[in-house]
Length: 388
Image (cartoon, rainbow, N blue to C red; front, side):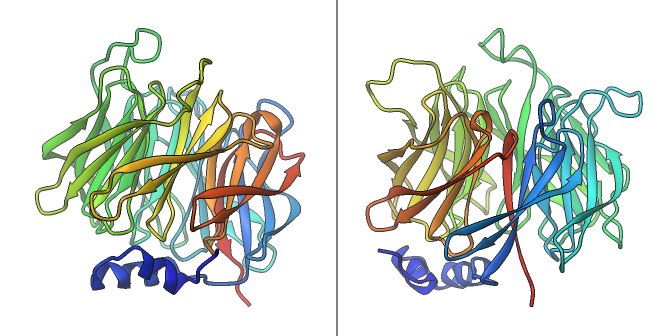
């Protein structure tokens, strides 16, 4: 069963305002898309690769879109004119920092042209986003223990950081939590708050975000905590805006929260495992996404080598683990849901491939459709509509 976009919005049972949000932000803008793949370049990869994606589920390789060093995570400007990539390194221009690169996106060919680079404000930047207005890039620096805001110029270029926040402290795992390690930065649906999942501190920090000045300030409720040793990694909102979820890398769990947008408060309601009860090996989670229809949540497991599928209770926001997809996957990092909502594309870092699954929306089963091989160390997947 593969409902239409209207069906997906209706099935979630959202209020009228949320229904408008669903139809406006998750509209299939085109039938063809560029798919950009961020990679690690310590092996065969030379940078960012790209493909042509059809909403019927077909993928066509187009080669190297732009040369770059460790562009492990990507973000697309709301105008679709620019793409931004972290440079996940610890030294840039002789300083102890990583970098962020700005690229111009050719709408006819899909190729990327470097505009400029800026220091990321900390070592090993691993995640970044563009704010809702397209005015700033927000970046999380894993080894630097910082989160930074970089203004975007009128031609897509990056300027020096307007704000750098330094985290302090540690948690209970001596090998992975000896210092702060921000692993992601996200905004709430209204763009008023920024959330930084810090793997090293077992906290999701909450900052008020000034979109005009490009500035972060600690909120009066400064963070939400997860269980010691969990290692929160990536964070996402439910399309209703009522719930939020963080995937915990070290504990292999997902923690669900109720989000109070008036108070700016996350309240934990549940923590569940991403793994089968009988699994005995070592595994680490990576990415987390909620389907735009609002009924399914997905998480990736490196070690168990799977995508976990959870059913979301539309009233409470709580999760029920219903299935795992494993075929063709090896060390899955980021994954993405295609704009039609029918397919889930998985970046298998250690298999050098992309695995395409079709979602049965009724029961949450992911069925493998095809494998795109010879994709060197894929990490991050981003879609951009092809106009015309």
